Image (tube, rainbow, N blue to C red):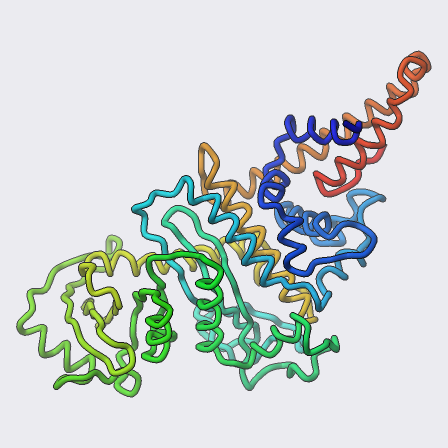
Length: 454
């Protein structure tokens, strides 16, 4: 066994770097190979990716991260990874999260309800020429229209951990830069071109394709949760054909929802049955109280549906389920878990650089969002298998501190060894000490994201 391998084994055993260990457990090299991440020469692509994960965890930009050592990777190495049009970033995210979920399957509660959550979010972008950005996007966060990117995403939750499965950027007629005028000229056969084309499909088609990919990849969930914007008859019909049960809020809109039977509108169905149904009481948090009852109806395209009418002091909220077997309370409680993706967005913004991308080029923007989601999944997995799980924010700060501490400790250790190597008697007894120091420097760079200097 070579000195380098022995040193790597010792460091792995003693330092316990959870990020490096997790990425190795996922067999990242194999995933990258399947996702067309290939390099003929230079720094191995999995090492560049590892550096990006460290950047996000340590909250550092490329320029700041590069200044940690004169031997750190050059900026161009990182930027080339972001702009490569052949890399399949979607495959990287899908294959890695599928591997994570296969690992979690062993410790998951078999009775726990697993859900897919579909949603979109608007992230502001002030630059006039950010590719993928649009004007006149409604931001629920700011309660006004803004310039930004509309990110449609699919989340997985088992009630304990959340993972980002997939995403796409949706563009509208107010795009700042049309896809024909994107900076990089790419071959129509590339992954980059395919992701450009999908931006103009419309959110509904993007969402349906996203769910289909998740099902095809073998990711299982008991229910798909969506809000009223996506929950339209055609969408539910598509999900029925996939064999995926849906629980969603639906819009009280007669043009969208027109049911079979005498009472065709949601309002008419509610008004008829509130007179003959026994209403139950419930509450959401401490302040919101409501009453509810359910009715089974049929729609020409969506099929048989169970609607739970929730009446608060101010409004009527219809929640629909394509699973007719579960009771009203289960429908309500399961739909509440749609909040998990909102919590995921919040954590991504606070700790993983989501929405803070400074990339103007579309391919680089896709890469940076993928890296944020990928790192989020890695940290979520580490937190889940921890003996003492904590909030993502708490674990994030611990990992950031841990990486800094490991780096400083290794630097100091190598400086000490380097000084010891200068002692004449030591050098005479062990001529390999200098080469061991060189190997330590190289291994530290691989495992901690930079090359320690003596």
